[in-house]
Image (cartoon, rainbow, N blue to C red):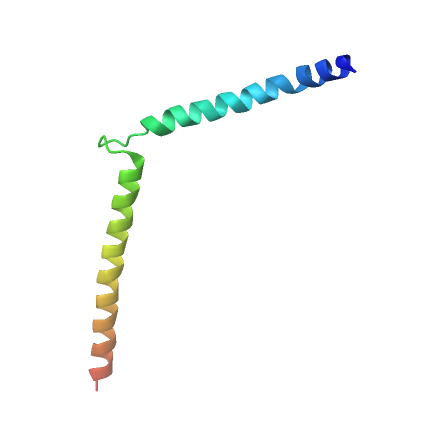
Length: 74
């Protein structure tokens, strides 16, 4: 019985170590992730979301003006 457990752990140990190293590496880089400007990736994402919202608002105003203009055309 103990030989089966040893065989099981020897078989799965490299795979588990690889997963653990991948998670540790991801956390280490995730905490230090910075963009070219020095901002964190979360800050860059929030800036991108804000810019997308501003662009959508502008495009909606343009579309409304075009619809209004099309309704006034003879």
